[in-house]
Length: 234
Length: 315
Image 1: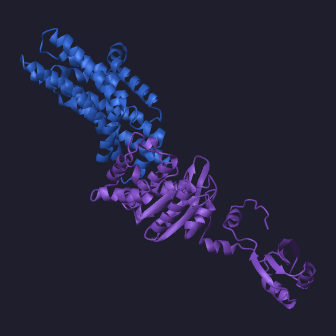
Image 2: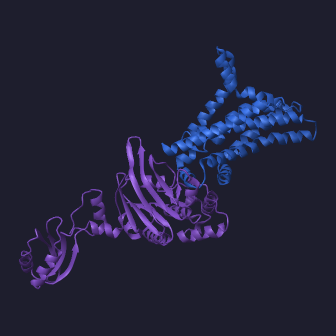
Image 3: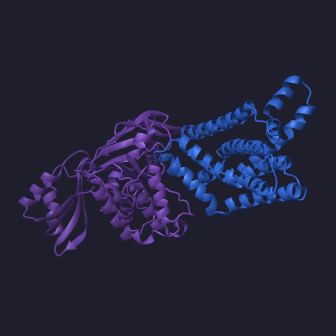
């Protein structure tokens, strides 16, 4: 697994993808930090993290689109699948590489908080809560998009599928308000990422929300392994 | 080392392999021979665990490739037919990655350097893979198969894309490696199989048509009722001498080959052996037999017979 993780992590920086992802994340977090914290003269970073929610939803598919689809298109998966490495290790290795890149990208927000702490007293529990929420959102979305990448040989299709899922996750809260029927509404509410993310932005760390994100990640990683195994027998 | 038992592979309605069984021992180079689409690559992909068989079992070094895939794959070095590379990697980096995948830790630098030397890419270790020629990429593919010093080597069309001098080098390397390992190569080039293999499995439309040594395959299918003979003497004398042999059904002069020596195609009924009678008749007539050979001697003809393809008539 370490071999795959190392290779994938390095691959992000051997192509423009990693740099583009970092640039976009740093741009948005820097812009919101300047607008709301520096210009607004506040140490409350909640608004910044709220605004990063849709940014992450739309940038993560770009980060993950090539992970498995590119291997399949080029045929490089043959080396991995005939090496003494389990399919689970392949999936987890790729997943952790994307998670590592994502962590570095959102670490900028912590750096901003540290800079602020030199001049003022930021509310650290709220910042840590916000950061944890963003991290959990990201790792879950990476797992979902990794699964989508295993469904196709085209990076573009994988990215589009990721955007569709992201859009659905953004609209789901609005949809839950307008649909009739309690069952459907409660299903949509249950699937809502926004509802689970909001408590983190006010510094509330609820265990069910943590479990929701982690179990969703686990489910999609397991599905990705199943997809790889299914291809072997098809 | 490799034991393939009754494997069948179905792709929808198409039967790619049909109840295929064979084995490869240590110190043996087995050639998997077949026309394009015969099922060679499918068989290799199943043995290496890349795809699963619809039925049947494969064990490598006693490990079932489905039940104990990691243990089985640890013993295998595999060069697929079309090995794809990460173009953004350098040769050294790529081989390091393969070392990581195969868990090679100790003495890695020497190991990789030795392999690069063996396959002739020692001077290219800092080259980007995407900038290498097809022949060098094939050598790199060979190198990655050798990483970890595997006991089993599975090489799908190992000399594809190489120039003639490279082909000779790689064949020699395969023979050398085959002395201490179980090696399996696939090819539709018969001369290649004949040059390096101790045993041949002929696959046709997913079925095993033959499993034997190249010599036995040639001998078993050599037609003893057909003889190409070079005889010293006048054609009239030869015809008169051989007309006394009842078994001969056809006598055809193929042309003059030396001074006063002519070559003849002599045939008897299918299944008969005319060699002894022909020799006696010529000896009695005092007509020296300069050369004689069975008509079918090349593996090409044997192969085409086995897979039921038309054989062009040649003298």
